[in-house]
Amino acid sequence: MEASESTLGRRRAVVARLEELQSNGWLDRFSVRTWPSRVTLEGPNEDVVSVVHRLERWADEAGVSLGPCFEWREYDCTFTDESGELVSLPVVALAVYEDDDLVDVAPRVETSTVVTVDELLDELGQRADTGRRPAVVDELS
Image 1: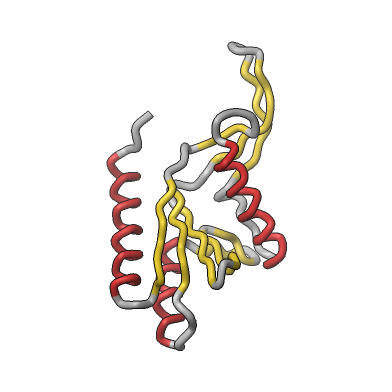
Image 2: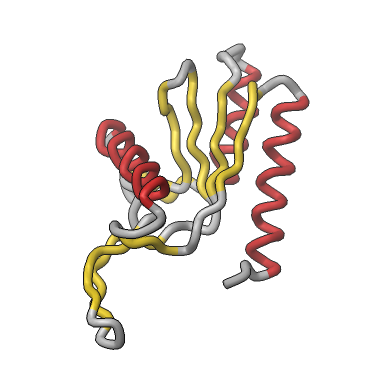
């Protein structure tokens, strides 16, 4: 299934912001990974499931939540007689690394407040103003 025009526009806007941060020296580098809107634990998307598990471990350690942006649920398909677990993924997510350590993820929920991708991008620009080491970002969409 192809992404909608609004989804593609959102992805392009995030990449443009990342390019701006990089050109201003506020970001060492970034990479873009494309993923489907949902994946099952079994099947061809094991790499995506691995990334989601890594992000969830970070969230647990940071005391934040990735839900409902990353939503796990059980499924039963009577047509194929299959069942299992799947995760629904956000249209765009960011994973920020410093010195190879995962240090931030968006979207996420802190207390009851959602921290958006745009807010994290703004924060990356503010980090540069404080002289913090430029980050490496994975844009996941």
